[in-house]
Length: 241
Image 1 (cartoon, helix red, strand yellow):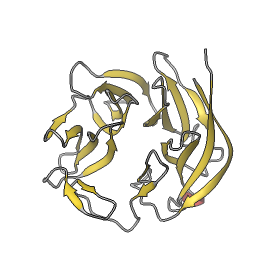
Image 2 (cartoon, rainbow, N blue to C red):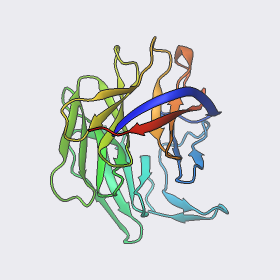
Image 3 (cartoon, rainbow, N blue to C red):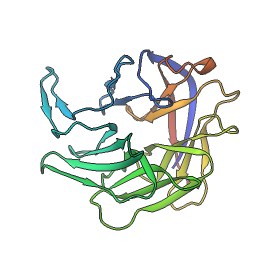
């Protein structure tokens, strides 16, 4: 499938926290937007489930520097980055609250920003290697060996899979691309542009797709102001042979 954006971005909300580049928000299948307010400043957290009435239930007891939490499709498994700011390391853990297990995926470099495949069997990440940044994916159960899907001299960050699981959407941050969104069809050696910016005026920070005809983009404002909120752009899927 080929993904194309169209239409004019529409502001959704302001005051969404960012960690330098990425805004911290997610959208449920029914279109509910969840975000971290900008005044939140803690570096270590306890993962908890929160009921609609605000009742909290711990997922794990340990306080750690959790980032980029993602729920697996159709289950309560969690893929999350755990950062050690002292040792300057980063790892991806798969937490299964129903079994009480937490396992680290074996990934080269400094992996971050896990994204589940639509069938929940794999996790894609970006990872900082010796002299490049790569997009890797690995089986979520920890079996097998992680596979390098794309390498780049520019900074690249995984954002989402298309619903059919055949294409990965990612950001590319370079002088030429200016935080553009690109798409990589699995099995192909190179990527293609999806959403582009000119003049380095607005950086995209995170992408999600609920409902299925929209892309939510954390957008930076002019002069590097990352606090202008989230914009929504329509997108459509076209058959690709």
